[in-house]
Image (cartoon, rainbow, N blue to C red):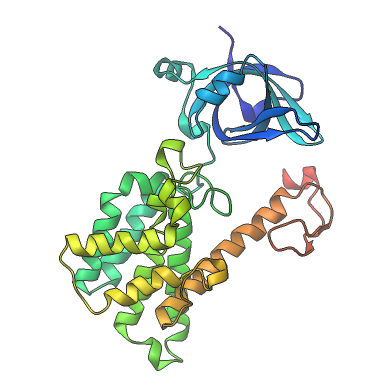
Length: 338
């Protein structure tokens, strides 16, 4: 039996068996009109693409059986090309239960947060217990989190844009929550209108729940690498409002602050151009919007520095910010390993 390797450790020209997750399958045609499927696989270290051409031995299986989000055992040849990492697929099948004996682990086939998801989840609920004294609000947050614990610990922050890896959702929420707490502590001494206890508690609640609609937006059956029908047609903002309304109804909560909490959800992306039907109108909504924007931009800037295609001191404007970014001189290999 061939030794199973990881996709991320293969060298140019090397053929091997490896496990990977299918994260994209799109129909396409060449400029000459030749049809093919553009597919993309990943493990926790590398993404690689492949073209499944019309008439190939894999065409029908790719069209009818391969599912985005599913894990596969592949025998293939890895190539580094001018267009990125490629796989020539020789054999492929869906992962089976017995593959665990050969080293299959789903966490090795997808990027994973560096921080432990269980610890982040527990820390966030500890914050709720400690910082929120409005009992109905506390009950609402805890109920939503605890009913969805397993899913929240595995959920990415997004399909593509930021924190797009298992556990990325909680990593993002954890950072936004810390940002909000810092802003409150920093400015409430200067601004009396920020000292209202309910405003502070709602800001914390908004940090924790602003993206909760992603529970319904991201498709669990597709490994959270695609959107559900509701995600495509409605989006996580409105779906998040629905989750809060549904839980409030279940817990028989009918409090004046509910509409302010709903406003936090629908306004957290700032403007209609960015998907929010309302712009932030309250202290707490603005705090969450700023904290969310900061964390997303910090992540995108870090990715720009770390994943630039060249070692240039100045990174070109083909990045999420659309402007040139000064990275500076990269340390020599001997310096970075010293």
